[in-house]
Image 1: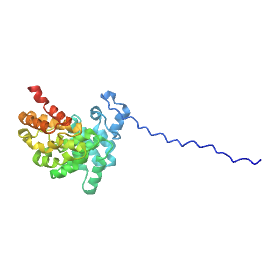
Image 2: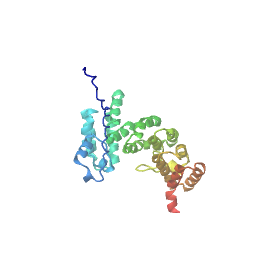
Image 3: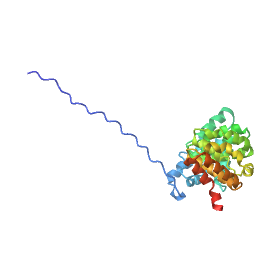
Length: 289
């Protein structure tokens, strides 16, 4: 009897490869003693970003310069920057960031070399170096419009620390030409990126944090509405907090104006976003009534 056809067992369906599981995001240390030695080594080498203010404060700026800058700048320039940072160890973190940025600006050179080096700094894995680059990019002379164009990538940086340094780096130039700045930055209020919209508000605050006040806006805050009006119902809490802080600044010098703006916004924009801004904007007024 002839053998029948060989029946093949149905093959099992191919298993899809297991999805790669992203490692959990590293949590920032809350104390210097809580920073693991390997994390501090990586921070000082420029291999990773900070995850807390404590980690930023713990970085040895001179060591970071000597570890991370040789691939970007000539050795002599690296040593000059490191020596400047060593000589100013006792200064605050923002002051030392400014010194690092100004030192880098002098070392970047000009033309294509400058652009290449600045791009390497602006995209570096270390948020600390990117913060230095924000100051380096805006050091020197130049029209305000060009300075804002230069600072925009830093204003949009994924790391909040770099974003804060971005507006601080260009704040003196903004304060010096506040009317022009408000006109230029009013266009940023409609940007799709919430970080850029927030920069427009935060960089023009009448009082601000860790920066000089803007006397003209303390005397008459109304020009600030060019930036603030489009943001009164912003979908991003990050932006709304900045708008509320802007108005809260102004309430310390012109409370009647802030009350009037908040009353008008409440009538014209009845959503929860504006209600949130209006409430936070008047927190100092409510405490003093």
